[in-house]
Length: 302
Image (cartoon, rainbow, N blue to C red; front, side, top):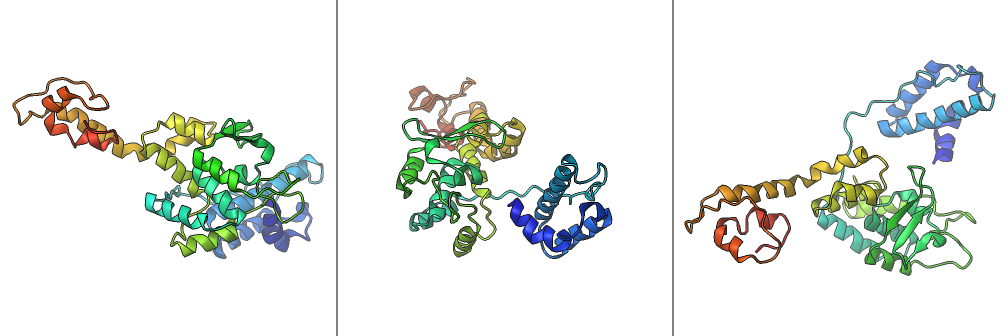
């Protein structure tokens, strides 16, 4: 990605220039030009970050005097709202069915993204030696947090991995076109597929958000979501906290039912949550709650 940014966005404007001769105002004008061309603020910021990294490395290598980076003081665009897009259950099922009809390696990779919540590079750079089906794990030797992480594999994820065509002598799950390299990107395949399915606004990274949303809405804790997504900081996982609001509201309905006089004449004074499974006492003492908050939590109603 960095190489592509340099080739497409940096070299045409600054490729023939010495870094020390580039002025800050030129970088600012260039950055605003990228925005005017239709690129999203986040994309412009990513391009600027690549330019800043180049300048920092040049200073470290003694190729640019300290304090003379043309990017010094150039501010990225402010991104006011954090974009969030989650697939609905119907959308996710339609996407999975479409992927299952394709034998392209991109389709296998995207299916794993849906089933594991992994980052794109964690799947594209996966090697066969890192897959332990006996332990139901895919190991990422160096994750974004700088530490190894282990991605649990469901039965369906294992089935997808077993179905991936394996090239003898090739270490990558998804070999690239260049010899010895993994598949570099999914964009062309993904862009065509999402438009065919009416999901043009869905990004690859939104599949990770969707994985998290399904977990939270199914009642799993944020701690579990954090571990499955490989977040080093629990504050990162907190962005999904609001998704559990429906189950929390259903839980409050369960408690409020204890204060509602029963139509059968029982006041129902106890303040204990109903146990899972059938409970004759609960059915007798709290008939008005049956099918209400307790059932809506996703547990089997008494």
